[in-house]
Amino acid sequence: MAINEKRIILTFDSDYGEIILHHKVSLPPAVVYYRFKDSYPSFAGEVLIKLIESQHLIQEDRFTVIEKSNIRQRVY
Image (tube, rainbow, N blue to C red; front, side, top):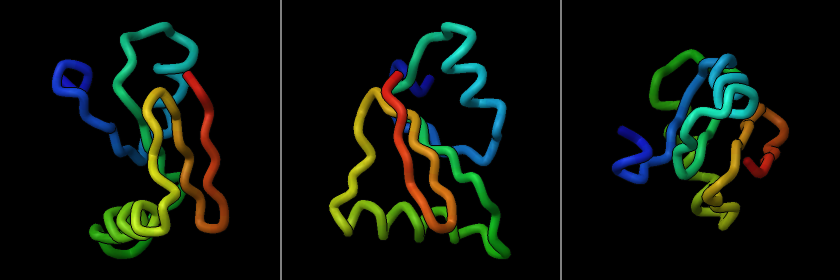
């Protein structure tokens, strides 16, 4: 569905990177993996909004890992 609708996948699931990068599945436009959890559900959205507002946009064809003190991207 994400591929057909060209949607970015947001996930807390650490296995998602394994599935995408090592099992040659169809790739969505981008994946954002949150490598931490906080105490309230809207925290992930707030982090993403700050990232977009600071002009560090999520780029297509990238697997992005967001940690509390670091953001890194890997090209598919």
